[in-house]
Image 1 (cartoon, rainbow, N blue to C red):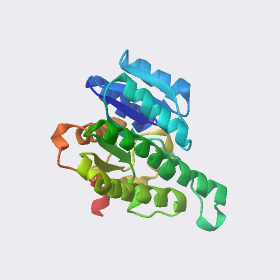
Image 2: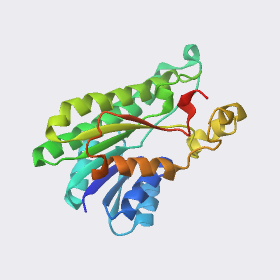
Image 3: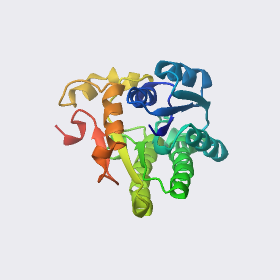
Image 4: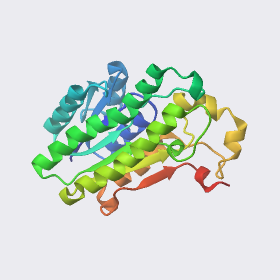
Length: 239
């Protein structure tokens, strides 16, 4: 089986994605800023997984992660789950906080994708990348000047790279989770008004997102690229 790099693999959606690939027999590089958390995920998968300490804002570190994954087996996929959030009214948000969120979510996604794309093109590999965006990239909420803007940029980056690399056989898509049962979303899940907006009347579990990600990286999605796929229980329908 091929290999995949999963960033943010230490918890939440990233962990669920890494485990899902492991269950399908892939070699998985579990990359996370917290090496101990990455190691826990790798242990859940077993011998086909490796833990890797990665700060996605470090371009050289992202290049090394790609090299390590490619040494495990043929690198065919990348899933960028590493993310940062900050809630504040725009006029009260320090620029260093805004810049950090953009650096992790946008620059970090690009660093990993650029390194992996170069490796796939060099090896003539027909690969697939999935970027974790958010429904907040297309639906604005108060206090999300940094987060929502960054997630919109991630979705557009997927479209641009799909165009750039389509002729090389590399597909790039974005997944937009809605409210998902992760530590980052705990405060929003407790908001009954937001829960009422979801037609399916439940938040997503990380595995719900992971199943869509693994589909997009599979041959069943062989003609899907440049797409934004919401996994939101119907939030964006406006019901």
